[in-house]
Image (cartoon, rainbow, N blue to C red; front, top):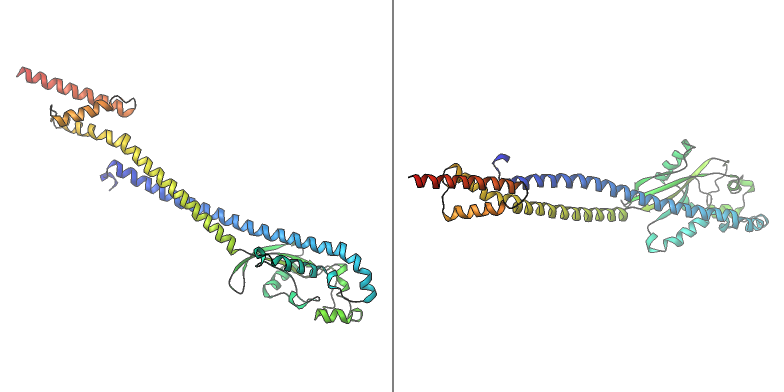
Length: 310
């Protein structure tokens, strides 16, 4: 079937096949690249926010707690501002007032909260906590999950490990103030140091990031397809103008020579003139045209000689 096609059709078909293969391969590569870039972007956002929240936590422990330490001992009351998780939650609440971060979520998810009930881990978070409990060397966990509303989010989690400072709120019930229990709702007694109590987890909405990546992919592919289509059209145009069109008069002339139909008619003169014009070129087609020109002249000279003899 391919052998029956003309030269221009063959080139168009072959270039189209190359075009389709290039689009498929480049599309797959670009899709994977943009997907990885989007995942890296979402993960980076989650890690940065976690670092910020940890900085707030450290500030509360290192700066706020020493100031309120005397007041806490004296009144034996629970001052929420001295609790790192409370400070972090309040800072994040203020952050969420910004429309850019309203769909972000931070949570100190524990199995038995002792500060306030909303920090209790859900089913998904309990699985992460169990993972941290089984693998003590594991310092972080991340990935993608789906919310109850069916939206895809990226999560970044770190274990909450009990330290000496935390045991003040996890002490025996006889030493715990009524104020602590009243605010906590669940005193969480009986804890010990270095146990994995829960997880600090940040949920980053990923649908918007992936939507942007998808739009960028479509834009890149559209530009690539447009450029490739333009290149194919340009190659076809140059091929027809520089190769196929110059070959046609030589092909007609060769056919007439093979059929012994060369004469001094106007059509042949026009073809010979086209060949003579092409013979002035210095490329391969010009050299071929020179051979045809010499052949036509030789045949014309021979016919004139025969005519004179007759």
